[in-house]
Image 1 (cartoon, rainbow over the protein chains, first blue to last red):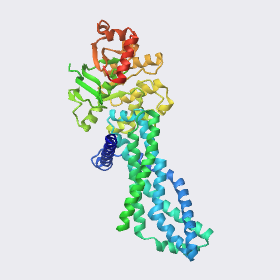
Image 2: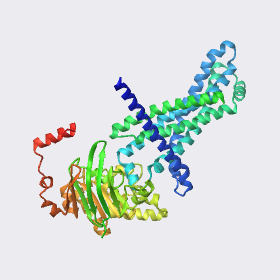
Image 3: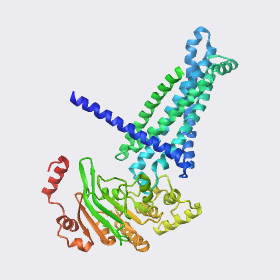
Image 4: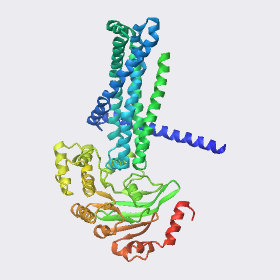
Length: 263
Length: 262
């Protein structure tokens, strides 16, 4: 029993330590992102743009393809039930609302976490193993400023941008399925979609995606800095990075879904 | 002349295990000061403390008269601009070309024109014999060339002190001799203070002005090579004579390190 209490206590302390370390990382990032450029310490815009291309533009093909397919699937699944009531026109409503409020932000975040969050961990982890982070510190170059702040800005802009496109593509996928498989007319589909979408749906999805981006970046960076012990450590933290990021994405999703349910 | 580095009663521990205990030493301006010792003697830990990558549990490190151990992070960043360090694995940023690696501190800490930085980078690379390799990635260079590029990067800001962590490790004798010569050239040309961590006696004989021998986290002796060769300290004699441990003693030491029982 005492052993169990001891283990639980150690686990809780470890988690507290992690929260503290992530909080320090968050504060440092915000300082180097917002305060430092205002005080003349500069910001690595080029690096941020390169990262935006990597996280956003290069994620588009896979996110686009998955979004299209999910749009097709939702429309067909919706038709399975709605067809019994002769209400296939409402496929458009269902696809639009679920794409904007939930599925496009969630799928985009999960794909970017798998593709880029893990890459951030691997990059920073490898740099740590190769003493490159130490080299930056010895040169008087702050690793948060040099590595993290540009990635953070890129991620929090790339995820919402890709999400917006994923929303459109998912609706397009739903249209393709509804029109060519179920037999809904394009005009009806478009009218229903426009009628179904309200400003709050778009806002909900975009706010979620912004926080998903924050979660992906911080988890990726934190796990990267946690790497110990060579290539094996990099592999371990990279896997942990994806799992933690997806878990956090779901938690953030839940929080905002509950919040927007009441607001 | 005032010492450029002073270490006073330095104590460093990893958890309960004391790695450095009561280290006192000073480094004079313009000398090549070698920290020598066997594996696990604490020499790399001492170096990491000297460059501020670790904070000691007790004691002080004065760099140019300023207490490096009690400084704020911003002050430490400032003083680091007057230092250069060559890492054992060179630690060049793999995503940047050799020239960009050397130019990095200049771009981060100065407001120089890009054309000036370009010229300064070429000068530093020529200095270490890497002229013409500006556009190569670190992965395209040999081990010795990577170390030279590391020296060029460490020299970029014209530091007062340069630290070398095992400069000859993993290199063939000819390349290692070339690096030793380069360290000496840097010292004689720029009157550069150099602190070198190594366990290679051949290198020490070529480069060292003074040597500090570490043994089990303590200073076993400090002095010129001649002075240390005459030392009656048992470990120093054994180290310089390249004599193996008595098997019984080595086994007992190994058991002690595993069990922590004296």
